[in-house]
Length: 466
Image 1 (cartoon, helix red, strand yellow):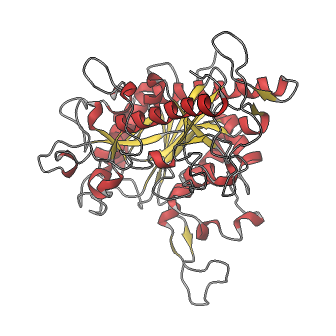
Image 2 (cartoon, helix red, strand yellow; image 1 turned 180 degrees about the vertical axis):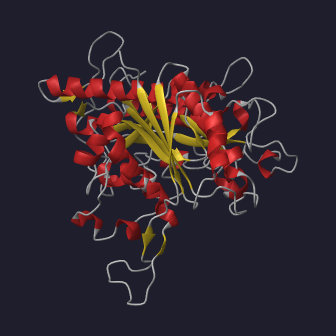
Image 3 (cartoon, one colour; image 1 turned 90 degrees about the vertical axis):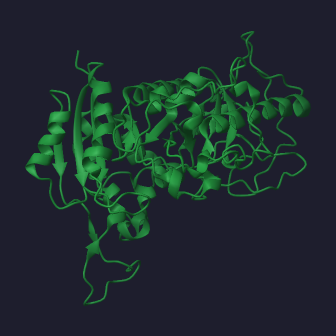
């Protein structure tokens, strides 16, 4: 039997940090930021008998032989390494929808370095079973991949059940084995944006087309450093996070014995002492924070087994398959739900997918395709002009134009495997403090919204959910 074949594609803009965005000028990024999570990722996979190769896409001119040897020596035996040096594409700046000036020179499109992994994907698609494509400071381990595959399989199971059902839908089944009564079709919330569904979708049956749009989500996190001057460690700062009054974290998200979060930081963020690079040694869950989204942009929904209750991450309005939005009330049904808002979209700095999922992105889900040559009318003549790093790294395209709806299982042992460590650990000191929240508190807020949804179903429809 052939081993599971994984290709890790990593984009790295600079070899040494420039001193911008909370980094230290001259800090050896390759050795201390890129290499540790890469080695962790590869080692976690090869230890399971998987065949793993690495493809580096570098924004700097060249990788010296001794630096390449540094990488090779750090990787487990048998791991292939390919390097694309000087990979930043060239383009005519500020020439969107018009011809460049006669004397205009091409310039580096730094923002599109993350587009280059699409060319690697196209070349390598038939040779691997799974692809992990992220920026150079993200740690993705075998545990993340296994959870991703399990949830993808759960989604595919629902899709198959919907295809084979007489009405093309799958319903939630109760503990007694009987279908739970669906909500009434009348007096449902009507969307006030481009969504085809309202904000009161809790346990509605799901059909074939909507099931195809479901996709495992990921949350970028950091671990607070332990310097005495850390502003987020000051008394009360993280306790008074945004929307804590509207959505206080549920007590059910914490241990009744010691009050600690039910989530475990080991899979996403564990690090030995002394820590490598900018990481924090042996973190506690209360030190793990996030900033890419918040509860005001989040919903919950109960899907049929084997998925169950999930958090629904932000998605473009016209792509939404439905969830119970945290901000929905019958008294104020016209509140506007955050959609493609930069601070809540949940950028994950990359994506992972099976070969068949990539083929689905390219051939069916994504207008204009997911892979090169990007020459259809959809791209309006120049894909480099129109899109940012966040688009190409997976976030704004997959969860906008491609209509994929990210979900996070609420069972704590599964939820924690959707947390991915941003090992640069710099956002905690550069992003606005108001955006920061402990992941354990965010999880607690999601459970609060779940409890609110259960109460709503009982009071509005007389339906008991668990």
